[in-house]
Length: 409
Figure (cartoon, one colour):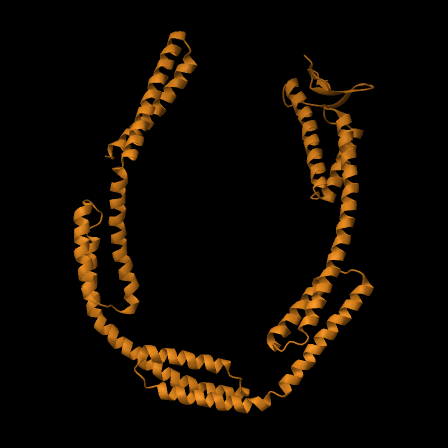
């Protein structure tokens, strides 16, 4: 028995023939199954090739096509046209190849335009860099501007080449601006030594103030005062490296003395607060024993007593404060959540919605059972089985809805 379609046929021996203008041409053999399977196999080859051609053409159009892979595809198309190995419309395959070739030309033109656009963009970016470099030439923000010139130079190096003559002209302008800035910066730092004596005097004055504060027990105010002194220190010009390090060591020694005294005082205070911590830990045990909440009103009353005792207990060590307060808050949140859930379940609209859902499922089951009875009468066994499944699912949902409704009110 021969199996055919509009493009060819497969005979009983599995020989595959293509309908060509010159007559049927054998293109292969399918021995793995029935003739109709062979027909489907060789026809699928055709559809797969057409899909691949259409996808490649679309990618070329979008500018996303891979040139090497499309070249390979065209070679396969040529091989298929020369030695057919599929059943399909070869005119459509030829048209697909023409579409790919046309897409190559468009791709080439687009690439050329893109390259020209990139060169123009690079030139525009270099002009932008030069304009910024020239605007910074007179800056006296030495560190920031010096870093900015390095950044601009890196940007320049990363740009693609454009018109050589124009690039050289712009480079001369960039180089001139950077050189002017460097010259001014060297001149500034050459005169910096004159200001260092004044910086040493100012920092010695700050050291004296720091020494005067070192024995203070006004912890908060003195901490603020030291912060202000530190800000002034940072704002003062640096001395020579060796001298700057010596001055800083003297300033830091006074500061460290104060903070060591403060930390010692805090340790004594924390020791006193440890007794308060013990009280609050016992209160936490009582609070956490309320969980899980079974009676929200009694839990709220008990928590109020615990909260009052908590406030009277006083401060605890700083390292423990957040941890124990989080634990107490967890109990407060649990009670609040249960209270909100009770309120939500008692809302009339929630109850009505739950009851309406139950009624809806009951009506659905009644309808399905009528349909099942009709199917049984008509002897439609498959419909009966299908409706049994739907009824079972609806009954499961009904039970869930009834269970939910029972918790409300």
